[in-house]
Image (cartoon, rainbow, N blue to C red; front, top):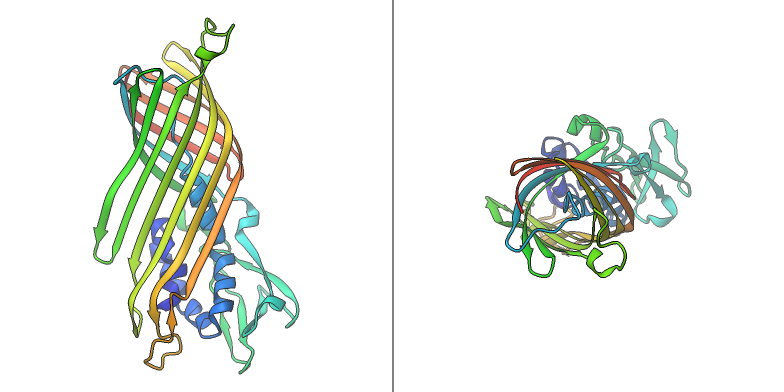
Length: 341
C-alpha cells in the first residue's frame, strides 16, 4: 500500500530528498493501519518543521538595496537561501496519552511506558526509527526515521530555497517586485509559484533627513506556492498529495552605497502558513474497498520578527549580493542579477 507515504513524504521531493523518501514508505503504511487520527497526530509532528521552515524561506531574497528603481528601471535576480534548522526541530514529543490505537514503546534504546512520552525524529532528525505497538493486537512496527538533513543535503543542517524575480521601477518612487513560475507538469506532478511585492521610498516624507546620503524604504511582499503529486494506491480514486504555502513579510529597509558596494539591512515581521493534504479515496486496510476520503489535512503556521544585514557588489549592470537573517529560522541568502536603474 502506498497511501500515507505520498502525502506525508510528498514534500520531500520538493526539498531535494527524493532518493531518501522511499525509505519511510512502509513505516507510514503501518501507521495508517492503526487509525487516521493517530496517523495525523504523528504526521504533524514529523512533517511540521519542514512545512514551517519552507514557508518561512519564501520570505527571503526579495531585495538587496533600499533604493527603488527609476521609472521603468529593472532588475532580474536569482537568489538561493539556506534555511538553518534549530536543533529543537530534529525531534518531536510523542505523548502516548494522546494516541488511541498505537503506542510508542521505544526509541534509541529507551523504553516508553503506555502512558508515558518520548522524543522521536522529525523529518530533519536522526536516521533512527522509533518502535510502535498496535493496542489491539500487541504487534510492533517501526515508525518513520529522520532523513538526517546534513547527510541528505550535504550542506550542514540547512536546506536551500531557490528563487528568481523581476523588479520594475514605477512612478512616485515605487518599485514592483514579481516572482512567478508558470505551472510545471511532469507526469503526475505539477507545481506553480507566484509572488508580488512593493517597495516605496519613505525618506522623502521625513523632514530633516532628505539630504543625508542613504536610502530608506518600506517593503511588503507575498508569495504563494502550490504543488500536487498523483498517488498510486492499491485501491481508490482521485488520489493526490497537495502542499500549499502562503508567506508574507513586512519590513523597513535601509541602505548606503559606497562606490560599487551597497550595504543594506531590513527589520520587520514575517507571517507564514502551509497545508499538507491527502486527497481522494483510499483503501487503508488492504481489503480491496476504499473506506477513507481525504484522510489527511494538516495546517501549519509560523510568524516572528526578523533582522537582515548584507552587502551588494555592482559591476556595470551585474550584481552579486549576500545577506544573513536572524529570526525564527536563521538564513543565509546569496544571489546575482542584472540591474538597470
